[in-house]
Length: 557
Image (cartoon, helix red, strand yellow):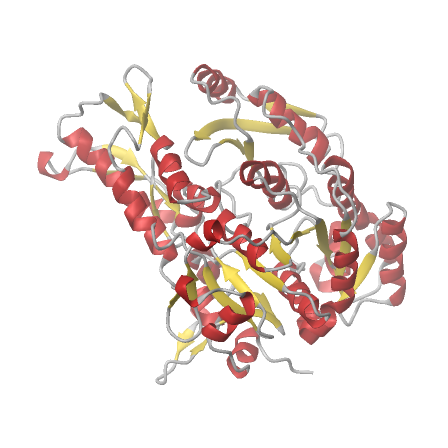
């Protein structure tokens, strides 16, 4: 049976005017700034001017990802549409896809099947220009830094100790390490430099975590760009760059309002942050969804050990958020891969492989229930090849942990396929919870990293390299040690070894270095071979993307 592609479904589904979606969301026209017929920005002043209470916050996360796929964004959108179908006032908040991953790895990231946000092409491409603003602010700071050195270097910056990188919204390994300022004095001061992909930049983190323009400026001012010859940190505030950077970001900070295929209001705003793409939208967008909806559905990317951990330990802590329920997304196919099956064999029933892979799901569920103390439901995206015996095994194992399993068919049926999940989420939202963090801020940097490794990853120990120990000591002496910690780790395993699938035990995580993202407000712990400027694969998705004479795009999912 032939299926329509995601883009074919999106292009064949009529959209409502964004003014109508705004009415559904309860956005007064005074706060609406239209970008054409089907997308708009909503002025962040709505948050401080509204006296409406906050709705329930639902977090969608997932098991450790595999090439088999989990469908987390699709589930997030389908759940929102399911809540709408059972009569709830709901708004969904998602991150904006990045051009780099979209063109490199896959042709789109806005849900799939009949659970998508639209206009799909715009969302996956240039959208409203937010990423351009983030890149421009980032590179303005880089330009002002180099110009300061060129013009006499009054701050006594050591060119060998510059930590700030330029960025571009595209995967381009050629730009990871560059040497610039060559060709004589007129071209600047020669130094080693490099680029991050825009979504890995600290500006993206600041953008996602800022709660207002004032907070944005304060965060920007704290960004550390390098160190003096005396090893004192130099900030964006020291360089006088903050006002101009904030001016570039002023309009971008307003959340983007779009719609699902079924007309549910959706904010798409912000993106991955902190050197790994964990797919979390901005604080402002999340808070606006909660202000407008009785239920706000959002997501945190990759596996729950990365996305949900950062959402809960960093975003919720900083923004004062308390989730009311968590949805853990899984597929039988992915669990069988965790149990050792090859991707080519996943269509066959294999209960032993499924049983071997289920511990990955159970560990994530246990973390949500026992570490973070939040109500949880497992959403299984059902595939036609999943057998009743396989589904029943997942249900049996989860019930032993006191967690219900709901089958989701939102990819094929949209909101109708998410109604059962919606009913369970509503039930969970009425339950009391005792939301807790996995660590407290008062501990040392080492203690916080060890808490994450032991309590969330379930590793035995942490090995800090000499370089990491030296940097930790320096950051502690500078007073940065009371910040939360952002772990930069492979998404494919609980460990820092991507080949260890399922629920590995007895492993040690090696922290090769740490760095401060002072503007964002956290310490980044680098493990394994994490890159902030990935390259394109051998056959990038860009090869399959095209546009015809009438302007119709093809090749996006």
